[in-house]
Length: 211
Image (cartoon, rainbow, N blue to C red; front, side):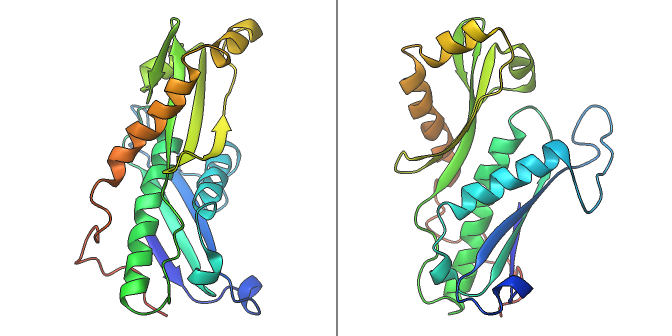
């Protein structure tokens, strides 16, 4: 993950608030078979994941504190094994944290632009058992799998639940007594990604130019 902040974009030139956007891509060798590069204007799955990442980070951003700046977050998958979109959300949060730390340290922003942390993880049901953070093999066999994005205070930002089995299986799985535990576990699993980021992640990082 990498984040870079820049000056005003055309749509923000008369506004005092900022914006956060994300780009997502799977590198050609991230999978067992080569993945073709999509170019500058991705469509379909890639565009959907980019929007998910952007919405997730914007949900916890104080745009007024960010000022008239655009933060661009690049999410490149180097090894695909299921759950890349939720891993990208969590990684984007870490990258955004570092970008905000750099801006705050340089005096570019007057107050901290992040309201709280956000993370994503997949939850699913395989052979009747609830699982967290499904790998590719589990995901391909799942009766139902869901992508959960939550804040550190337990607020749901987004839930995506594609149906992979018959409708009755989907209904029973979403109503099962294990669902609250799965949601709770989703955040607990993702929380480990943030251990220690109250300090700068990489003090030697020399990211985007401070404007």
